[in-house]
Image (cartoon, rainbow, N blue to C red):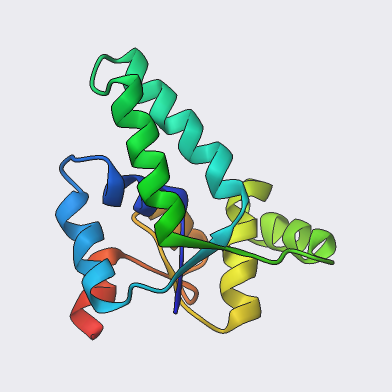
Length: 135
């Protein structure tokens, strides 16, 4: 089991330059967990991709459905204080802090291609390439 962020989920279900890296992670560990926030973030990413003319509505719906089968929602009960602490510690958004919180709570790595997040939490966040190389 690993914790993944929305970027990695999007890379796995929307073809692009980072798709191979995301699918390599999936090949190593297919048990993906994320805070339910990923759903809204992915919808937004899909809408942006549609506006750019790179994805049809049907393609976006299909991508979301594939992601929905791929990711399990993590429980964030009683997470407010910890998420706010992490956001302050890492100087990140509370959204990003939720992903870090889930990884901490589960004792699992957070696999993310977000370099800023990796710099903020170098002991908790691992890039897709690093994750695959370690396994």
